[in-house]
Picture 1 (cartoon, rainbow, N blue to C red):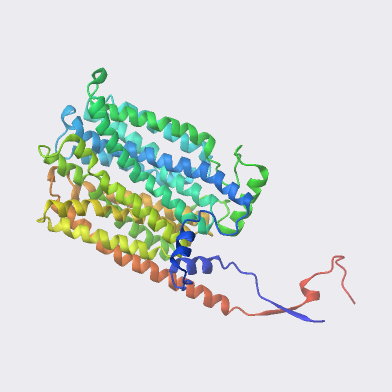
Picture 2: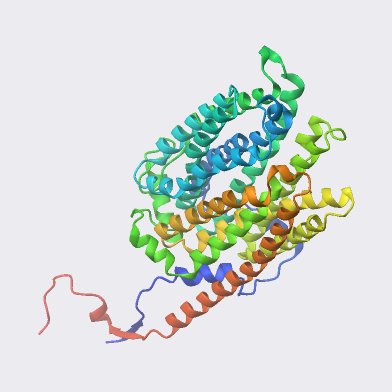
Length: 508
């Protein structure tokens, strides 16, 4: 009887993933028109209508809610700075580094409860947990409008951070549970731009509130900002109860048919990680045993350090020279930085989806940031150069999408490790930023922040080194895994051995 050669069945997802995201494989050259057409394609080529409809529904549910949730959280965090430069400082008699302390009080619970919040997602349905937390942080945003003193505001900002801690990691958890590898980057990119959009909108809202509502019903314009932000937050939270489909393994969504749920589970089986286990010490030990945790967490920490100067330094500079800049300019000019972040993130995400190479846009954006950091560290330059540095520094936020996509892709076959890695990145990065903020960017050092600008020039430079390191390790892993599979022995089996008798009887 003829013999058939077969090899052991192995999981080669690590090879595929590493190949695609290491940038080590050459891509076929296409014309500009072909590249443009391909870049605008939302669905994969050859996808069936039924799968397109499923993706449309998932985008309408998951992307819509997660983006709106990120938008509202960013709004409810950034509004503190906008309120500070629009009258809150004077009304509540704030001084020195009170703004830094308010930020720290908000960020401490946000960092501490982020990983426990991720673990809680494996025990409580995200469709219940995330919207409930959003409703509660909306309540404390509303109460912030009526704070009479600094101590009361401390309490409210602490609780906004506590209940907001689930938003980011929860959203990444949900997005990563439903989409396949080629679909992740641009969707995480869209999610990433929601945060700077929220920061932008906060500036515009404060301008409108100051111009149109200042003094209405006896409330200052900055108090109206908190009220408006909470009014925006509540409907988004309510939408989440209906929109979040949990995970493919546990979904009870009324918006998906049985066939679509089954299709989602099949897609997960071929393109992402199954959702089965819960986080445990074994997962932590596994995560800490490889290089990914250390390099990605460090790189994300550098990102958070570099990002510090984007949030308040320009606003405080403009407020310091408030005789030259109006309240509207103080709130609106810093939003240009966020606009740069939005555009560059969208372009980088689309490029990464098509090229499978996040390294190039990540390195380019970081290099641009380093140039702007060196300008501000030098300081003795024209006002135009300072504005260029503040605005173009927004390019560094590209890394929020790219690093998270890169980390998610490299751990896509292990959901527990992915949850631990992405949660650690955001948690530890924010924790370190919270600890260093008052040291490197104390509000009392406005408008120059000499220490902070030098520090962010250093962290930006270190970021370049770590990006090269991550790419090198990704390529190394891909080659190592390929070599391991190529060296596996070939097992020869006859058809009789390969296809057992149905009767179960043995032949004499």
